[in-house]
Amino acid sequence: MTELRINGFSQVRETLEALQPYFRFKKKQAKLLVQACSMLERDTLRTMKPKDIRKIVGLLLLIQNENYMSKNRKTKEELHQILGLTP
Image (cartoon, rainbow, N blue to C red; front, side, top):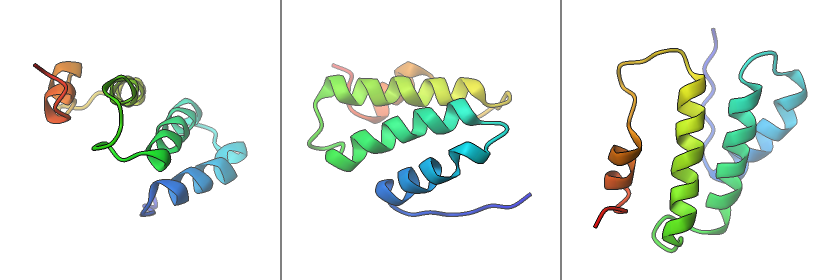
């Protein structure tokens, strides 16, 4: 198994888009992450509208649900709290 670290939303999106034809597994996760990266390229979380942050949370939860079971999963409520979306 190999690990690759890529910094920056643009670089991550570009790399995933270039590699998508070669994915055998994780295709759905890569597609969802490309969507999230595209949103995060335009705005930072600080300048992003709450509805867009909620959309990113939704994408993260979909990606998380495609992973094998893990003890470190965050709930929607926990992610909202981390990102300051709770009253």
